[in-house]
Image (tube, rainbow, N blue to C red; front, top):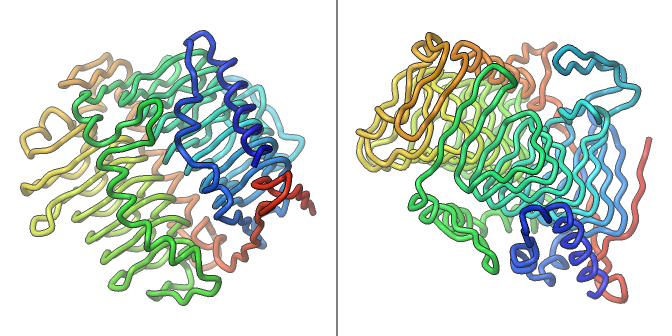
Length: 473
């Protein structure tokens, strides 16, 4: 397994060189994350459909348990149980707008991952880097368990466990565990664990910092140790269900799926689940004893358990909804936890926005009104008052406000409009508004997908490395 060991050390050296200004050593985090023999146990697989280009290149890499869709290139990289989803890449001829600049793409966009280590990471959306609009690159970087790289090209950056880089180009940055950033472009910045930061150029700035004691309970990730905490315990307890899905070639569906919807054969869908029209259930989603109303989506690494979603609900990547009732168009952001008690489900009103990286974990009855913005950590009903605000009240804010540990500066109307527009875009892109002929989205385009399996060399000098594969139209 010497070539695989050499590849890991190559990635660590390149990443450390990019992060030298922080005196940051990624080695103790990455060497202990995954025992290298694990990388021999799982196959990689790429999807083929009529709606997505067949364009894959893999060389000198390990792809154990990872999924690929769309135009992808992987070189000198280790991808462990990661999802590289290229169904929203830009196409040749598309217009790309950045502030006052506009250009037309000369070629289809490509996800290009090189000299990087991604562990149970999602890569999705498209490049928002104005200097490289046709290449969604991830170079000399590492992302740890259940991180999200969403529209975030990066070079020389490290993402801790359960962190999210969203619509942000990163250059030599460190994101701590459970940090969320959406800030356009960052150079050589360190985002502390548990910090939620949304910044839009000259428009608004939102910040929240989780208390250290909360992070220690839910997400712990220190050098020399794998991630620990309630999030990992919750996910690990459901691993046997996913093993069944990945170990079986032909799998009979456990619930009926309408013709206008799609449920990945690599999702876990338990009996007593209802799936409505125009619904998308992505790979590695987990649905149990729940109802997904028309137009709802459950994205990668989502868990929806003992819950009812009325319709047109967005459950973003890594979100967990347990013992809850969501009214129409309630939104639950990246890696959030929304959990009520079995006998008193948490209620979330129509159009309410649960911010990315929010933890609502209550045992007492709690009803969140319609049209709210909710953030931070809520463990009792009384804490809702200092962790929420009516969207219509935020729309009246033109300078700034402080509520508890949250700081907001700038234009409230623009902040609210950006969230509403984005939620509508997500629903549209996922096919929530499909009318039988037009407005197709992922929920319709992800039907009738076939999967091709690839495996590493099991023995010999290239043990653990996958054969070079180049597939183009």
